Length: 206
Image 1: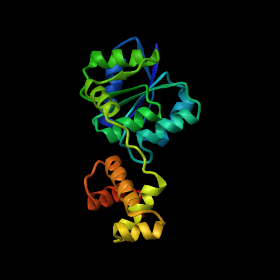
Image 2: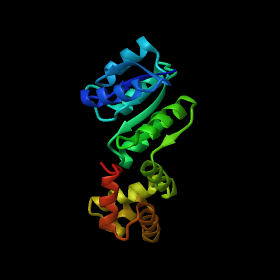
Image 3: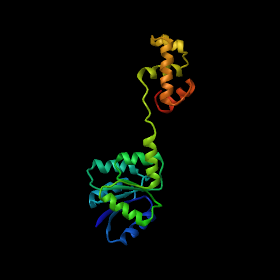
Image 4: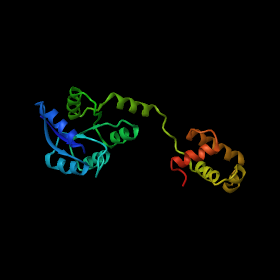
């Protein structure tokens, strides 16, 4: 039998999942938790095979819980079961070490198959989540700005002209223009104002 730990801050959801798995003799629910902190304590006590984990919870969120379980040396496979499928939810969970990621509208039979697959160490993703991951992998990685490009952008952000930036950095005006063009390409913009805005948005300029 596959021993489960159900982690969700909604008691109704936990009740529903426990009842669902109790009706199938391949699974046994070893414990429940309403947040990440409880999950860590229960996991230590019952040593589950698979943790069914919600992401957005009080006390400790799902991604932090995944990291803490990994750090504690838990052997459990972690299967995220949530209503959220945005990149900001999916990618951190997968990177933290989740074996799978399913949405709460997953049919019962598919959920059972997913838990069994996760127990075997297989990655399990809902179609919507798989599509998001493929999209993020196809997107070109954001190339970092060089130190000189950042220096030029910093001066531009302070209102310096190309000539003034060149004088302060002891380089030619043409070189300043070249650095700016490279920065535009890396930031995906076409002009000085947009480059400064994009750099601030990425936290590159203080």
